[in-house]
Length: 284
Image 1 (cartoon, rainbow, N blue to C red):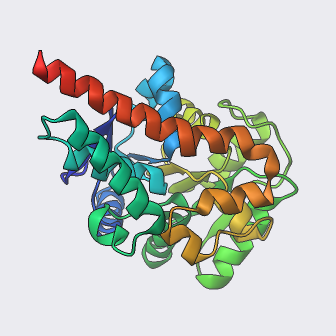
Image 2 (cartoon, one colour):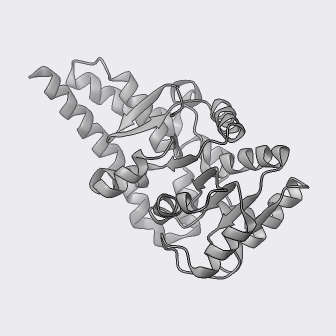
């Protein structure tokens, strides 16, 4: 059963527009009822891949919840919502430019755009639930024992939480190695966070969740374990609030330039073109 809240269709992917608090409550209820739950935290890169990769799109569609992880996704949801009933092409373009301006320079972005629900934040929320309900948590991904160090930091924040991280360096792949398989089978976690980056983390969850009866909830968390372990730092809140987190990540890793250009330039353009296409489809 999917979360019964408002959602928006982005390239055929249903993205939930619920508040972070509502999503956390939903996760808590799913864990309480022992319902298998797959969560995808979708950023512009993930949605662009789903648009061109039918198989990956099907993997995303099989998730029980897709959250808007990224200012670009929140902007797209607001833009689609504001132009849903627009019949004038120039009005659509005006709203496009206005919402982009508000996203970067405006002070009312939080009032206009849906709340961002990132994997980095949701991980901590779910870890808190796990601690309260005595559920085991397992972390996978990252180099040089990143998952292990992240597990230690989360455990320090939530004393009593039974959490482990997979230590050996390994290739990010949808298929579990014998060592990883044995660790999960023996530890029997209820919650698994996979930090392989997209699409491998979503593919891993799709390929492996059914193999381990103990796993109730699985979520791809991208670079969240690097933030927790101290390998990298999240963008200052001011940059996050002005949709400039991409600038911080590019500053830290210039090699991300092509990925940033896709998310910051290509994504808004395709969103606009898809809305214009829908406009003409209605017209004719």
